[in-house]
Image 1 (cartoon, rainbow, N blue to C red):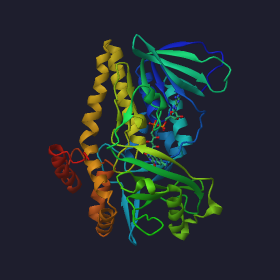
Image 2 (tube, rainbow, N blue to C red):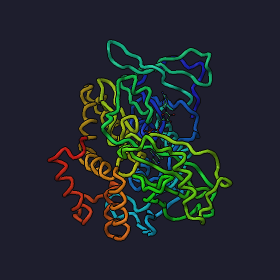
Image 3 (cartoon, rainbow, N blue to C red):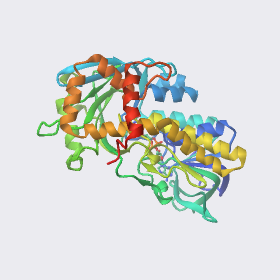
Image 4 (cartoon, rainbow, N blue to C red):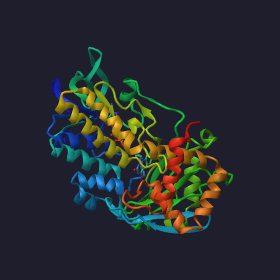
Length: 428
Ligand SMILES: Cc1cc2nc3c(=O)[nH]c(=O)nc-3n(C[C@H](O)[C@H](O)[C@H](O)COP(=O)(O)OP(=O)(O)OC[C@H]3O[C@@H](n4cnc5c(N)ncnc54)[C@H](O)[C@@H]3O)c2cc1C
């Protein structure tokens, strides 16, 4: 994929996508596949690092397969079969629950590799992908967004160019400077996650499970609402991290670097996590959850992925939701272009609401509950004694509920969702 040319002239297109992470590349792929003239801007150069746990659940795998990437994913990623959950001295191995539409496995793959694969897929489908191209300001004409002014990062002396577009998709991630310039804001009453991760060389780099610890503690030994993980990358390294939620009333006082150090020291010795096996300093980031950032629809633009706060509050998973929201936005833009009616962009808001609104409401209520450390301790220590209960919890938290069958997890979820429909469970 080309770095933007210093001589590139201003360009008109049907759709401009700002940001080449999972949400932007998926959106560009689906739009290009539908025959539209799409320009995707990525300010960095692939392959580029992105702070992440690198864990793909069956939901992500399905989206990648539907983009035609099953073979490349299998060749570059490390396949795993389920979650090994640890807490209060117990361990449970939980394979991914069966689902009629989703595969029964996941992958761990560095974002360096993954995001390059998907951006290249969008380019092969016909999207113009420009790297080292940063959208620095909206282009506004007659009060409507009509694209962006673009800086060529490798040619700072070259004048910025204008990419004019009928519609723009904002996919610039959790910090979303471009989105904020268009007026998006985060609803602070929604939970926000905070996570930090680093790579370590480990003899257990090729495990067939992803491991998570549900009883992470601060320096004084108190259990905190969050989890620690070790994900096998399969190339000699493991991805190690901790995540925390803002529903914990003292979360601002928690130093994630210290928490990470405590977790690394606490991890069982067979992983061999220590300063000598660390591959570099740990880096962190914010996880906006529950569709907390909006509005998601403007007169000529849509907001997708982390820029729209689409991460699942239950488990901090964001990649699947970035692919899904990118695809849903592509459908809405396609409809608007095909019908010549910009009002069709609003179908994106309806699609978000149909697919996520009730589920995310239940999730927000749940994370508010576990924001109380004592509640978290009681729930985890009870769950770790009961395999069936943990299997339901995994099905619910990873959003793998079956549409075709009413099992115990679906029944439990429906009961809570019924209450959530009636009562404003998650509002503060
Ligand atoms: C520590 C941590 C661990 C995580 N672990 C997991 C996990 O294991 N599994 C999981 O599913 N999710 C995980 N997540 C969440 C996941 O990383 C995000 O949900 C996901 O990356 C969102 O994709 P996105 O495309 O919306 O944004 P991003 O991946 O952030 O992509 C945005 C892209 O836009 C580019 N960009 C930004 N501004 C501009 C601009 N103005 N012009 C051009 N380009 C621009 C950026 O360079 C970037 O490439 C984790 C997050 C963190 C912080």
